[in-house]
Image 1 (cartoon, rainbow, N blue to C red):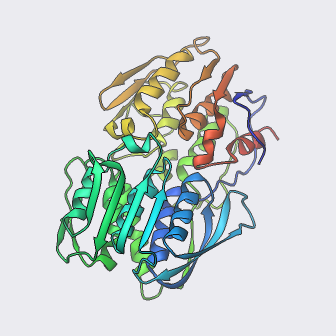
Image 2 (cartoon, rainbow, N blue to C red):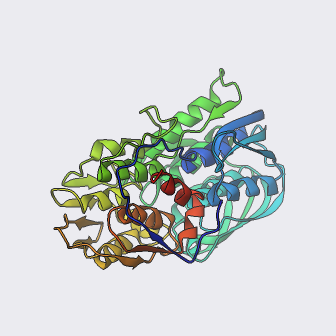
Length: 398
């Protein structure tokens, strides 16, 4: 992959593109599969696994916990890998470990639950932003079955002392993030506890469905210890949006039209409707949809999106700020935002602050395919989930 400058200008497309894009594997599926592989009995091989910051954090942490993990190149996509994990049937080999998850929320939540199957002391820490993101509900749920978790105000860094879990009921916490519920679901079989659903304030139910389906696949008696990772549908949304905005043809390789991922629904929301729920309708691709709405024929209101304020950055504030910066009309609400279609000549170039958020960088790059003068600051932040994104974007010019 080519090194990226500190600021990258996106040139508008001179003609509608016509090319097939290979998108790296899903981060959400890869990290769930890595945990389930580590908890399985024996060797398990993951095909098409994403190889980016968030999944590298997970692999590194599993190795620090004593799991045997081997990583080999993918024959098709340079940002994928074939990853083999030797599962220990619920045993955590290491009795002590210090895990640094950076700003990988999925890894932070899943690893916190995983180490609670161990016997010893485990420290989990991240970067400054990760230390601001909520973990309290997950800590309390794990504490209720016997883990002793020391943290400041329910956030990382945390130290976990554990010596077996009690077999009891846990109410699944969903209010802040379904990653908490997914973390518990992933270790439920080996932990021996029972989960009681609680739908209060539920966020992203599609991710719960994903976790349940993957657990079912890995726990099935017919599982053959090989698992194929789907393309990342949040990442695919940028190219689906580019196709819609430019009138081109950009099919996604290996995309069958069916997906475990909630963002597999993204094409169904083009052109943008007047109202979309971040809870019920789409995941991270609501940000891509907001870019499309600037070129739509009616206003788009994103609702049920309070969790966006707790992600890599306050994405509600960030989207409204940067959309306003290019001349678009956008308005922030407590749990979402509204975007209005732009009139001819209303939009203009600007330097886009990405807030070290990969999805800010990628969705505003799609805007740059239509609007001259869009320059992306810190484009390298895409390494979190899509390291070769800008190379893929350039394929649209071929």
